[in-house]
Length: 379
Image (cartoon, rainbow, N blue to C red):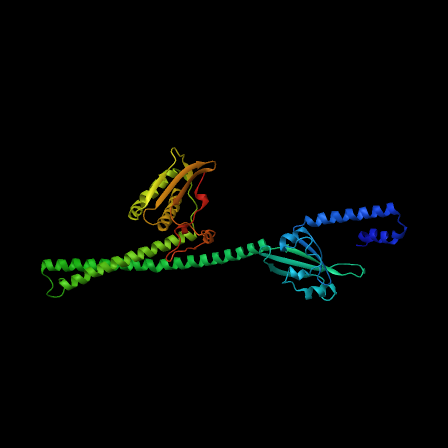
């Protein structure tokens, strides 16, 4: 520091002996150095503030204007706490007085000119006994870093929940299989009972209790039991399907890329859903590109994506709505679009449509829950 300040010290010591030309040279050199330093500070992304011992602003660079909205010509001489009300000035004063640590670090949030999370570093200025003291404040915008930290934490939390959910779903599958097997055994026993009773009725056995013919009441009970078994098996199959789909959603299989026709995938999807579309009174418009070349894609996954999108479109429209499916070819490969005449997605929800398990439906989850993976498409 002594070498850096020696020029000014020498000038001050010889100030009375300098002639007009020498004084002009010194002033030009000082102006040049000031201009250089200002240019240097204004290229720094971090904000640099200099305040005196009474917290009054003496200097700030352009980054400070962007970070906390201070405008040149309006802030000089004003307390820094006018712009950073969350700043603990009393603690910073102790830095300048030499009590405690010589460097302070703060984290604070500002709302103007836009919400930001700032890290502040403060250190006393070395005035070398010139009777003037103050602090240098460095403001670093940590908004993006903080957001990434939050996103990493949220990602880890979701991953942990996903693993837990996968484990629970897998465990649910075991008793479902056992229930399905025992329902099959019950069904066989009922059929065996009916068969034996019918056989006994035909041969007239039953005097010694070997086989008792079914009474009308017993037959009705057996019939009702068969109906109950059918309902139970249907519900178990439905639960098994839900568990299977859930596991596939959280542990998606890698795309099986093969040359395939995107138009054929669209046509198969519409053939599958056309009865439901007709029941809802919806009009379907197919605008499939002619002579669309085959492309490397996973036809099964693309069809699942289209099924999800079309079902979402059906639920978003009322009767007499129009569903439009269009295909085409671009510079990066083939493409497909699904459009409907529904009410659209509100602006406040548009940024959340790809969040896992997010839905505005009262029941179930969003139809696109299986997800759209860009890897399913090829060139």
